[in-house]
Image (tube, rainbow, N blue to C red; front, side, top):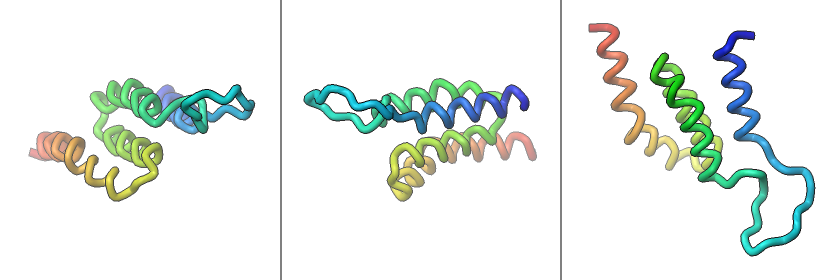
Length: 96
């Protein structure tokens, strides 16, 4: 398995990781190890450097954020707002 494939597997494992043990109840109850915000930070810190190397990781970034947010419409709108312009710029630069 290549380095890039390993990185993607690790990212998916971190995003999907949830605690199976019961913890003491606190004020703010979490369903997993990481909050949505923390998962988004993990996705950003791992995928953005890869996205700088290859544009396909921009799509991986969008898909992982969408999976984390569980709101496909809002995720698509955010992708169009934040990622699509940069992706289009890279594609046009490669073909022109």
